[in-house]
Picture 1: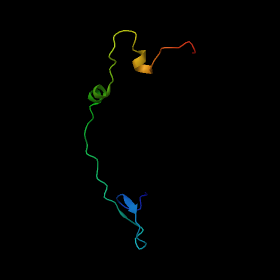
Picture 2: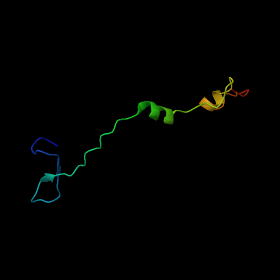
Picture 3: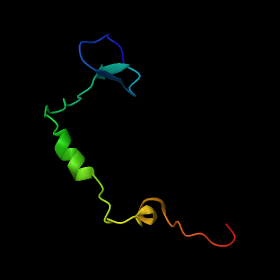
Picture 4: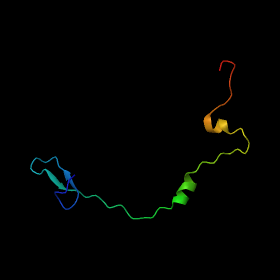
Amino acid sequence: PDSSMDKPWCYTSDPQKEKELCEIPKCPERKRNWKKEAKALATKIGSTDCQCADQLYGSTRTTKDT
């Protein structure tokens, strides 16, 4: 939590030892492929006409009460 030790540390539950170094694994370095991720996450609308509003927003049908 602060710079009192050279490496990250954690509080302990041991009253004789307030804190100790923590073993925090370093994240592996890897470059992200943003275009590939965007393509995998993209949602495609399966319609080519103007009736895709139901798919996007729920029903657009109105009743006489609305």
